[in-house]
Structures are given as structure tokens and as C-alpha cells.
Amino acid sequence: MVVSNRMDAKTGFLYIVSQLGGAILGGFLLKMLFPAAMAINLGTCTLGSGVTTLQAIIMEAVITFLLVFVVYATVIDKRATPALAGFAIGLVVLFGVMVGGTISGGSMNPARVFGPALASGHFNNHYIWWLGPIAGGVLAGLVYENFFAEKEKNKQQLIDSAKNDVVSNEVAA
Image 1 (cartoon, rainbow, N blue to C red):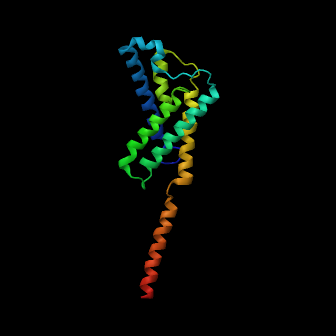
Image 2: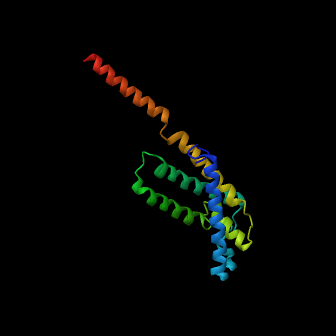
Image 3: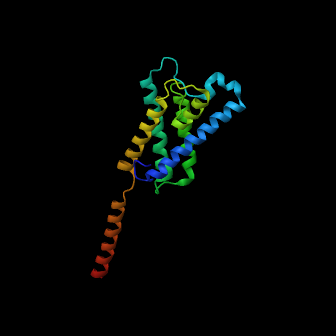
């Protein structure tokens, strides 16, 4: 949302720090509560069998693009019906995990991988879960803002046009 000017940089930075902090706490809590989970690196994402790093980056970018695009379309866009936002977002997360899970882990969020990775010490190919989601999220924000979002300028032009029509009708009458 910082890229599309829907959030200032300071707030965006605080969101990132908060997510990473929560993920770190969550990762170490998992380690403390479920020590046996260290055998699977506390759920840190890994590449599927035969999956290349490029394939995983693209998968993470695509599923994150879909997630962020749906968030813009259902939560951020004022034209949307908010009653369905949670359902739509949940379906996209389900899709991302089901499709991306066996390929790249279906993370869609660098913090989701960072916390367990830090707690388990498992950082194999860790850059994948930063590059893919960040690229997909930024691209989704830019695409939505530039091609789908209602523009303030257009809205103001419509209001001015409607006012002119009213004034013209009053003068004609």
C-alpha cells in the first residue's frame, strides 16, 4: 500500500516491523511448545521436490499477487461490498496454500517464513520467500491502482459535470 500511496512510508515500516516481530515471537513460541517440530524446521517453507528457485519465486509472486489484488478489490476499494471481503480473502489464501504449498510452501508473506526460520536456524533458499511475495505484492498494488481503482480526479470530474448539468437545466428552465 506504500507503493500505491495508500499508506505513508512510516506506517508501512511499522507494519513490517510488527509483522516480523510477531513472526519471531511466534517462531520461538512454536519451538518452546512443540520441540519435536524442529524435525520439520518449525514449518519453515521449503522447495518441493524438483522445484527450482525461479519456479518457487514465480509461484510465490503469483499467489501473493492474487492475495494482494483481492485485498485491494474487497477491502481498500470503497466500491466493494465489505461483507464478502473476509470470504474472498480466505478463498485466495486457501488457493495459495493448496496450489503453492507443494511447490514453494505457499507462504505469501516473508514474515510467515522468517519467524520459524530464525527460531529453527533453517534459512535454505530463504530469499525466495522475500523476493516472490514482495514482487507479487508490489505488482498487484500497482496494477490495481493503475487499472482498477477509482480515480479521485475522475470522481471530481463527474461531480463537476453533474453540477454543470444542474446549473444548465436551471438556466434553461
